Length: 372
Image (cartoon, rainbow, N blue to C red):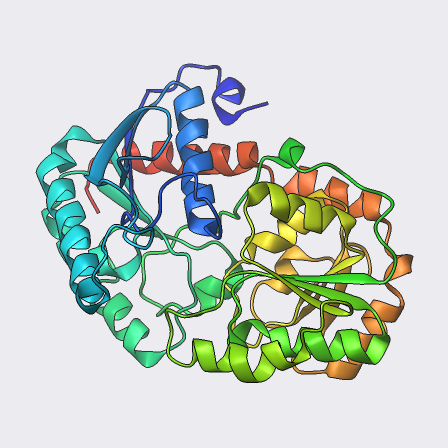
């Protein structure tokens, strides 16, 4: 039962702006966890009768109003001159911020998904602002800007692990976990034998090299899916040195970046998802997507995994950097009941629950007269 029905269906209908930069269209064609969350929120808020305005590309497909910032995604062929790509990003992000300032009085709630770059202008906006942060912010430079603008809006952590990375004086709300459309992921009780999956950005901090070592030492097949991390320094070199030499098309298979349909198929047929992250993961959407298919997760204890995975029930949590523990977890993966994984996803990580939790928060804060 939705939050509004539990409250008797007499809730005020809100005017909600979902703010993000037009890096990709929504829904995203490939890798785009943030875009998926924004899509689910837009559809959920709209379904409950709220007026939703989403800052997005002109080719996005969403209910409610689309505030069109660019004809297509900044990273999806908007610019054909790579020399000016950094300026293209600045131009369209500036246009998005300018339009938000111009339109801010049209909304009751501004739900920011663009990260810390919006913080300095919050004080000139004419609506209550909520920040859902999608990253990990342990570096001192991140902490500096969050400390400077600690009271510029409400910060909504997506995990307790993420909340701990923010300075103490930041105006944090309760944690709201991400959710997914559970029924969009078909449960599979009969995965392929001895098949592991790594799905995500191919970056060193994501631990692809560890997944390869685990597969080789257990004799399992490993399917690697995700984009090469070309946007960050060293991304191409990491792929060339640590991943590509091991790809043989038989035991270590790289299928490239996948779309949503391909992702679901890979998750369903895998015996386990490997999540050997080397940083303080903020959430990890792929973990709950795996669970929805019945696929257990084997993860290092870095950041959020211990909140998402129940050790020995929906997967295994291994000490950070303990390769032997991860190998041992793979060898006993048959002890995990895939039906339990599915049930945990249904009970804890549905899009309905996520939408209800945000609306409850918005309603509570909107009743207060002061603007933060």
